[in-house]
Amino acid sequence: MNPASIASLIRSFVDGVIVLDDHHDILFYDVDDDLQLNLAVSKKIFNFLPYNQETLIEDETFQITMNEMKLAIEVKKFSADHDYWILCMKDMTNLSTNQEARIYCLEKVIESLNEGVMMSDYDGKIVLYNSAQEKLEGLDSREILGKHLWEAYNYNPQYSEHKHTFKTGKPIFSRYRAHSTVNGVPKYVNYSTFPIQKDGETIAVFSISTNESHLKNQLHQTIEMRRQIIQSDAHDRPYKNGTTFSFDDIKGKSMALKNLIQEAENIAIHNTDVLIVGETGTGKELFAQSMHNHSPRAESPFVAINCAAIPETLLESTLFGTVKGAFTGATNQIGLFEYAKNGTLFLDEINSMPIALQSKLIRVLQERLVRRVGSNEVTPVECTVISASNEDPEKLIDDGKMRIDLFYRLAHTSLYITPLRERTEDIHFFIQFFIEKYKRKFNKEVPNLSNALISMLLQYHWPGNTRELEHLVENLIIRAIEYDKEIGIDHLPAYMKKKILTAPSIKVENQKELKKNPFKSIFSNSQEHYIQKTLDEVDWNISKAARTLGITRQSLQYHIKKHRLVKPSGS
Image (cartoon, rainbow, N blue to C red; front, side):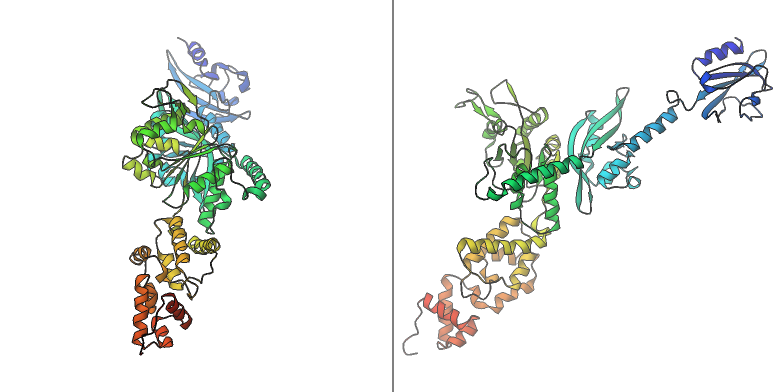
């Protein structure tokens, strides 16, 4: 086969072919007109190209620029009776054939998008993170690229959505969640995650995040305007959607609480399922109702159920409904999913739901279809599901009490309520707030709390959180009497006093108040005897007895009359 035939064959795969002899003379050529090369046979290649190769080397590849085009030239050798050299030319500006240029252009396109793009490889390492994603999450790509996702965002690898998508090959659509936090403020984004597959195997996973700040701000304004319109008479009538509270009812001054409310408001305007995590007494249902009333679903029903309060045998029929004959006594009854319509279903203490029922709930959340017990027909589920847990979901999963796939479906977005002990500023606020509340309720004036008691309350860990603090303040107001100079440690109910004083966090010096005021540590039945004994010891000298008891003369006179104490005759 002669060189021209070989060149014609190669020409089918490249943009141009030139055949040279050992002296660099052109023997044959066939090139695209787009290359604009005015070649001539029997002329030196140097006359037409900026080609300065003194020696032709087989399989060498080099590049030249000509006519504002970049050409890649690959040298091939053909031997027959004589040696010939074939230059195979590719137009590097032609994206359809230049893979390197295509990749470069695609990277530039991704970098210029308003949508955030992040991609991870088979090992979960971040290999792509564009500028829009940086702005959305407030992070620096230089600190993100090359890290595992769970290292960059500080979470357990077990809960990695990219890892889950890589394993299953199934995309995850329309999640709304904050993976990053900047200056204590979570950065929420709406995103979907997709697998990249080649030859039937997943080779990477990427997420596209959208910037909805403009739309969100408009929706915020609309909801706020609506709230202001009805605010004037909101407190004069109960809500008609099954709720009692709104964000206006969430009190506190700490920055942590303010950030939490802002986060909850942002979540509320999206039609997405939410998992609220918080200890007992932190106000999970208060947040759930507030989110419902702040959302576009506010006019629709809010339906709440405590999963721990209903037996397993009844919980399924309560949630999904029944048909007549499904079991003894069963009637045609809709479940709470249907009853909630296009409103909100609140599943409190979801961590108490039996594992067997969790698998059925997973199917409803995934398919958005509910089947009544005993029926073959399905009904679409339109409601948003807000669930709450008073235990850490990660621990529940590790202990086998919650299915990980249920967690993924419940927690499209998660809201973690900080415990009261981590919000000292709010402890101060709530003490005064509840004092004023119960003073009005009981129509009673009471003195201030002692410094020792306040110090002790600030140190206490409040396992019952805000609810426990409210109950304690209510008891203090009830137990205070008009002659008290201040409300002290001695006013604490006996069970709370023992609980607080024995808490490891309480400093011993705060217990000095008990020794300083012995009378106030004596309650109820023993108080009368203690006063009588003290009066007898000082021969009923009122001033001396009052000093011994640590109270005023007026207060002692009050207690003498209250207990109808009488000075013994002959004294």
